[in-house]
Amino acid sequence: MPRLRVNEDIRPLSDFRAGIASFIKQINDTGRPMVLTQRGRGVAVLVGVHEYQDMQERLDLLEDIYRAEAQLEAGEGIPHDQAKEMLLKDLRK
View 1 (cartoon, rainbow, N blue to C red):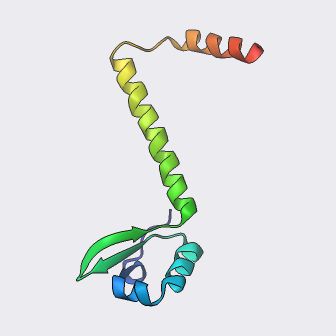
View 2: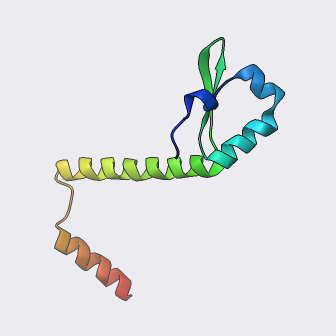
């Protein structure tokens, strides 16, 4: 996801209400998120659907990695050669 541009991507909520379509267009055109503010404080972040899905997939992958690391630390893992053999056996079926 492209980095936020502070001078372009942080806007008041009142501006958003007045021009929702242009905000959505900007998010889709740039691929950057937009921060909405209310009384000078951030209240929401808008991201495009594809960016959101990508973030969710990355989070899922990170959770899988953390879970695997915890399992390995607990001694629940299996040796690489054994895992490889199991996978190859399943693929042959």
